[in-house]
Image 1 (cartoon, rainbow, N blue to C red):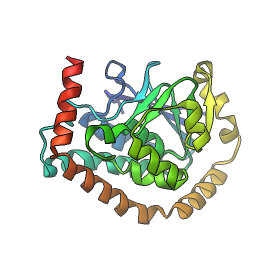
Image 2 (cartoon, rainbow, N blue to C red; image 1 turned 180 degrees about the vertical axis):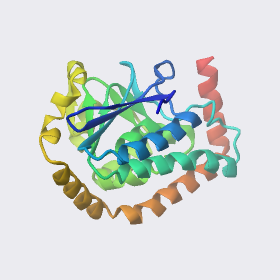
Image 3 (cartoon, helix red, strand yellow; image 1 turned 120 degrees about the vertical axis):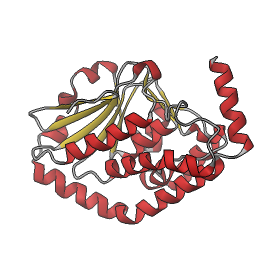
Length: 256
């Protein structure tokens, strides 16, 4: 199956790789990318020999900078915003509950929804000298795909709370200290993902599935889905706020 906004590769070693492929848009998530991510995750789930799934970005600037403002503009009402946001929540849940370990290989900066996607993965390998931030608070909203709810499960809750409230970009070193990034890597390491992930790929498929089931049980993944839904509804409600509309207008004016 071919995709326009992503690429999908399968390696004999048991590794599969999804690449967000909109480098001219810093890999921002469009409605089409959302639909393609949902489809490719279903495809990958059916791969019988899969040991590990990687999601990364194309280019050397960004992993993902969140939602594309062509689709997620400031003029949506709460109901319209929910309809646009919710499909990516479902993608994040597909990713978080994937049957084998998932790794976000952060080839560049991640902002907003980009950090949500990365947080939905089990592990995050981040390039040195990059920056990462849940910056939604600067736009008068909160995370809208369920990634904030997941963040509280992946790092210490007080660290998650501070990051969401401050809405700042943090350095690679800081996110590693917080436990969000599990490993800091050099750019050259991106060229050979099988070597980078050799500690995953030298295990059996059944081992990987057993460990992932244990991890899902620890996270109570079934109970997390409605918490993620609640986050989407809260963000959609804030979409109508004057603070959000003004923040989007400021951003668009800076860009133009």
